[in-house]
Length: 421
Image 1: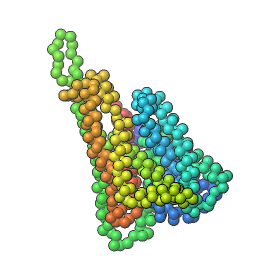
Image 2: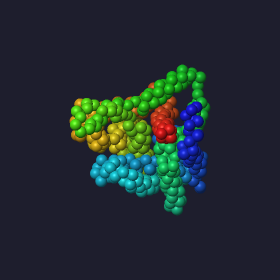
Image 3: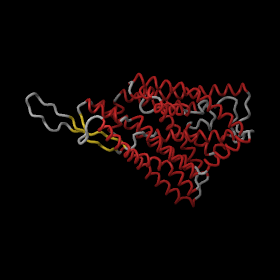
Image 4: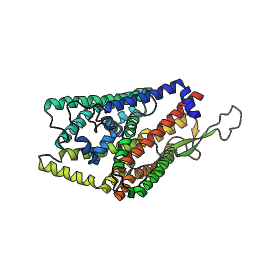
């Protein structure tokens, strides 16, 4: 209660929170505005029977279910961000722009991501419209209708991207993650309603078990997200001329989090997994025999839950390491420690310190990455045992929701700490 009181007595923080709430409400209104001229009566039944579109609908915040003007959500922006992050590994100039050029370099880097989002929005929107048309969910579109709908979808995606960046600048928390979180929360009543429609009394022990497992997983996510490995750091003590050198100075520690990447690996992995599924669904009804055969083989492979789970686990672990490497540079950290007259006991400043930090970071990240990957595939395992198809989407939602809430709480605490000082 003291925290809530402090939040609402701080005018700046209060305005930021209300701004975020307003933007999220606006995104929910936009997701309920359908594209004109499209009959969506068959869309609801199609989404219930297709796990791929169910997951895509989750990331779009329910926009696909209503065939809304923001039906792609922030998906193209996430795809563009993945490409830009990967390019930092291949391009030293982009890496320098992102990590070493300060705020100006980061703004330029983000601008490149925005520009790249536009062609991705056009491509994904076109693929989705063609796919739904081939599945007889929507009527076949003429060239004029295709251009009209594609323009609306692209504009809606760019609007959602802009709203997410407004949260970053004027609100609190990560805008893209919060928009996805709002979509998850908005779909929760619908998901529960569908579950209770098919509920059987004999499933009560199973439901209780899943509920208890969800609580345990949530507690585990919180524990691992908050866990950190402290590396002791000692600052050299200043001595005056003529005095004997003093041994030891102020001591602190460098915290290395078990999960430096947060929720980003999950969002990245889901986005990457959706791409081959989209291609497979798109060419499954192609007139070309070779394309149709390849698409069918791809769909069969990804339809196998164990193969899908193994790929999902691998992508989560890989992106955890990748994003940690992008966000945390041991050499830069060691250089900053040396410039500030600090050192890690038992390790020489400079290269030796950077090597030690990198060694510890790799071991710590391994634990966080394996845990995150295990939690990601746990719903798939439970689904394979119980046969309840809604669990897979619920597991991904749980990961994203818990991580986003923790991130917002940390940023609110940081704002309150600044207020105290």
